[in-house]
Amino acid sequence: MKKFEFSLGRIRDYKNILLDREKNVLVGLMMEKNNITDRMEQLDKEFERINNEMHEEMRSGLNVTRIRLYEAQKNGMREEQRLLGDRLDFLQVSIDKQQERVSSLKMDVSGYDNLEAKKREEWNRQLSKEQDLVISEFVSQKYTREHKNY
Image (cartoon, rainbow, N blue to C red; front, side, top):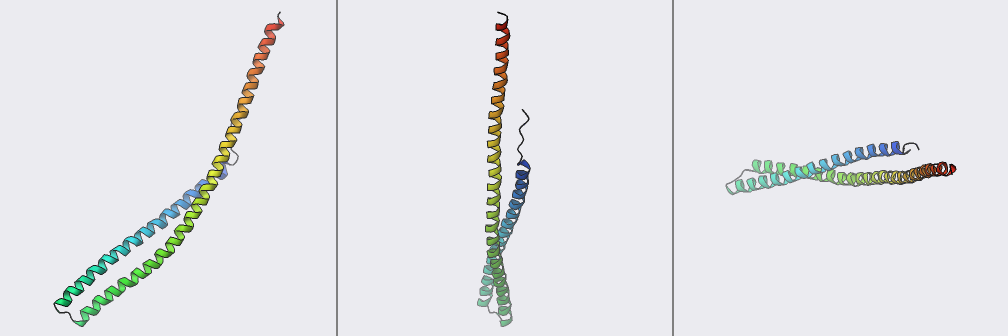
């Protein structure tokens, strides 16, 4: 009997390549999300520091120009946080869609793996039957030769 060959192996291999690519895209999106989250936390800390600094200077007397400077810095940070929040929302939608793609490809690959396992099992059963037949023929021929002489 010929060697086992899974005819859909190339398709499964191609799907595995696609799965790896999609996983890499997902990892990239998640890394970007983490970077944005980290930046937002930095902005929160920086905002808090600037706000405390402004209040500290206000106690000792602060001119209007310095107050406007602090307010402009805080407004810039608020705007950056708003933009980062929008980007974070967009990324979350993209991550959800990407996770669906990865899940779908995993199911495809798993289906091919299960099909291969079934085909291999079927091939092994057929091989076993053929081996049993060869053994049976051998025993039968040996028995016939031994009893032919009598």
